[in-house]
Image (cartoon, rainbow, N blue to C red):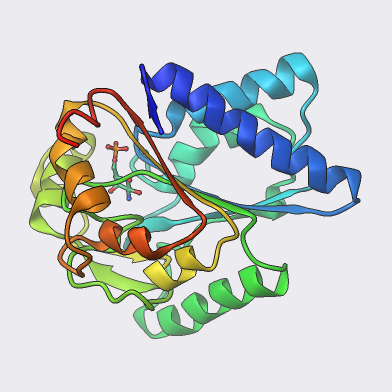
Length: 244
Ligand code: GLP
């Protein structure tokens, strides 16, 4: 769906998330949410915070799994996705701390595979992700699934693309300071979600949105694999849709 601007679009996405939470809450069930970082979902988090503060939406029965984290990364560092998520979302809602899951950027290298399998299993044992929200990077990545990612990939350690590190360089005060690796949920992990929403705003994303939505389905543009998902909605603003 194409919306006039990111504010209207983000409100719609937040409303859908709230509906899932309320419906599952009514059955006494937890809601398992897959969350994303970057600037794209920030207005969705803003709107969810507003729904919490003004309309009493509770996150006590919400369990979250973030897509990715840089590696290595100290969670107390300003550039960590742990810090980002606390700042833009978790610190402003009533989610229990133990319900928050974010890939661990502090692991010893030999512990990573075990951690990634446990991350997948935890999601699965909870009944799977009810809804996964996604942004898209200019390389066509979702999470940190860079070009070359397999459609059935799971949570794993990956190497970041040069363009991705370039785009992150402002946050880190120079590209040389951007970690070269990350832990990310896989394309396969994302596919298992009951619903997927990919969001994109601004003309900066128009070219990659065109490739992801209308282009050839290929590992060169990992987001293009989402064309094969039945439960996907691309939520974009008119600027990001300008090349469609
Ligand atoms: C990072 C994140 C992605 C995100 C992308 C786009 O690379 N790992 O999950 O989609 O940035 O960032 P932005 O939303 O700021 O354009």
